[in-house]
Image 1 (cartoon, rainbow, N blue to C red):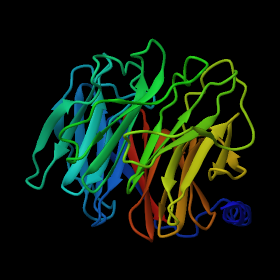
Image 2: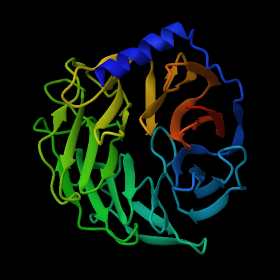
Image 3: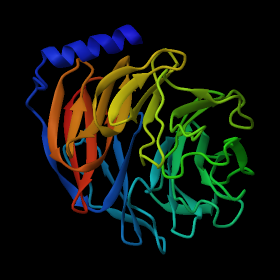
Length: 349
């Protein structure tokens, strides 16, 4: 991993920060905020986002060239869709699962079946209004889904989760994933979650002895219980405040977590147990991987940056909160928001 990341960084410097393929499809998809993406097994792209109290859905059957007119999943009073706090989407074996949170601190799930009908499922948090930070994540594999969030039921922020074994229709009793011995985890950083078989991985920004570092914790029994949290990287970030930047990760082709995160305004790549490698300056980073090829996005000087698996960079213009997904082994799509509109660009992986 370290060797691979070093090659990527060298290539990016050689490439002069320019993607060689100029066939970039960049345009506005819709009006809205906090877009999130999922790609299914047929390479169809699914998009969820918020607009006022409306939870909206759109899709692209043609690898991002066009998107359908947004349709309403649900009107959720006081829907939270701002500042990293937005709806999540994941592909299951029977359709789609979406989670959304309101400002009161309740998380709800919605499922889309083969008939094209959205159904509202139960509230995921089993104690009322405990997700008041509105920071959550969702992952799914086959019939299994897992949701994680920052939870205040114990009087301070802990990481809690819940699993579904029926594609998001019902959810288990909530499980405590991690509680900081210094009373709270970082209060305004979004956690991340990934599923691979019986393994559930959760990444979050901790707060220990004044340091705001990223940690990874793993379950080997589908999310019923979790082991010890492991700090990522060798450096630390002493900070009297919250960076509001939780990073992201994927499970790579080898089955290992591959993480990306911000420390002191610098973007690092890191596998657990290995030294971190600096990618660039920036924040709000994202990652996705397909067939051993990883692509990345982040913000630098208020500009959206995308780097492909060859280390070639592309500036996409001003914006916030980029999300990146591999469409197939040749293309990636990046979506972001600017001035309450959702933009997208399709680039080579």
